Every structure is written in C-alpha cells, then in structure tokens.
Length: 357
Image (tube, rainbow, N blue to C red):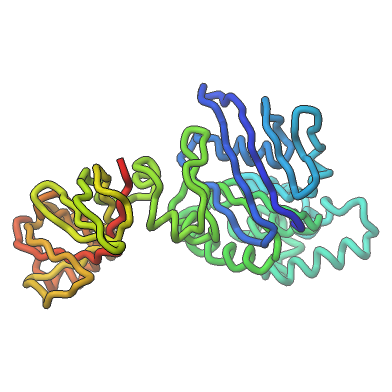
C-alpha cells in the first residue's frame, strides 16, 4: 500500500454496543494485529475496511483516496484488498492450483499459471499443487488460501483469525511459518485474533479492541509491557494488578506504596493513586536475600500456591500484597518450594508499570 490508511467508523453491533474504532496505519509494510476478546467488534471493523459491510457513519481513506464517507462507499474490488476469512474457503472439488487460478480467471492462462507457480514455490507448497484440499493438512490449506489471495496482488492484506481452525500443535507450527511469510511479502497486513500468543508472535503493531473501541495502538512490545488501562492489562494477561500510591518522584524514579510495602519504580507520573502492574515472568525468586542491587526491589514473603503450567510453574506469593511468579520446573525443584515456604521475590524497578487512577 503506497499510502497510509486512516479508519474512523461508528456502527451499532448486534451485541448492542457501538463500534467506534479509529485506526491509522502507516505506508510501511508492517503487520498490525487487531486483538481483543470474541465479540469485541474486530471482524466488523475488518469487514468495514474490506468494503463488505457499510458502517452507519465514518470515513476510511487510503492516502488521498476516499474509500468511505457520507457520500462514497468504494466497491470492495476497487479497494484492491486481499481478505482471508476464518475458514480457508477453498473449493473442495478443485486442486490447490486450480483454487488459486480461479482468482485469476481474468488473466491469460500462461500469465496466471506463472504467477501461481511462483507463489506456490515461495510458500513451500509447490509439490502439493495437484492435491485436493481434503488431501493436505490445515497449515497447507492455509498457505494455499494465502497463495490464492496474494495472486491478485492486493495493496492491503486482511486476515480474520487465520489460525483459529487449527489444533494446538499445528497452530504453533503454522504461526511461525505465517510470521515468516507475512514479513517477506512487503504488503501491509491487518490480522484479527483473540489469542494472546498469536498477537505477540505475529504483530509488529497491536491495536487492542474492547467493546467496539480501540483502547491502545502501538508497537507490540510497548502494548504488551505498558498497557494503557486496567482492562487492557487484564486482557494481556498481566498477573499482578494491585492498587497503590505514588508517593514521590525524582529524576524518573518513583517511590510507591502497595499496602505496607514501599517499592521503587521507573516512572515520571505525579504522586497519586495508581494501579501497579507486574508480569509474572519479571519476578525472580530466591531462597536467601541476594546482594543489594540498585535496580531491584527485594521483598520477603511466603509461597501461597503452586500450580503446574506445562514446563513452567506458577507460584503465588504473599509479600505484603499478592503476586504471581512463573519459573521453570527445574528452578522450582532447586528452590524446594512448598506451600508456606519463605521466599525472596526480586523485581527490577523498570519492570513495574504504573497506570494512573
């Protein structure tokens, strides 16, 4: 896409709430993940961008070209968008190659064959071209669907829950493949998902949507580590969310109180009430107090719970306020943790995120 895409639409959704979403995408070929719970309006926004649904009001512009306003609603084909829905929607009676060729039926046969052959080679499914969709795996069908869409040379690619129909092992494999493929396409992409792992793994940018509204839109690492409000923090799986107070700030460092405990955090907000956000993976556990480090807070406490989470263990801790840490199973064994064990929890000042209340 040679120009930025600006979207600002309003529409009453079936759930009764208002879609009032605004998104601005730059002209660079980045992958933007539209992330949110089921029913939050993600697909409705995607269909509005594609031109499949017309919102009650709003504007959509690609550079100087208006796709939607009060008097204009550009036909989907004229928007030059590639749209892949949750179902791969391949014709079951056609081979993978013929499915892709169907999208190019307006071209000369030789040109269409060359274009499809190049795409199948680049997506690693050339040897499967003559097979029916029922004869290949879910991940291979997904790549065939992607090839069919890319064959039309879209200026913008829209993917709606592209991994939702896959089982967990296949999903993890295809997620890695999809990221590599999308990064190599040089086409701006908007990808809808409600799966946190998909969002983090696939997106250069993340737009978090809750009840029809974009709550935060930034680079994925920024959104993940610095959620803008409590709802976004909960949706992104921040394990420790507790009320506290910013007591004072000095040169980018804040002294905060949580219950009876005082902590240091990197923060330039003024004193006042705040929500303290700590991710479980940012906590380090020790049997004995480590040597003092200026960048860390060391809190004495006790283990309140232990829950297996595959190769990792979730450890509930009470250090004057409840926290959750995740550590590897070998680390838990080395610490000989049981419920009630005394423990030291360390957290870097830079790993504590504060949301003003």
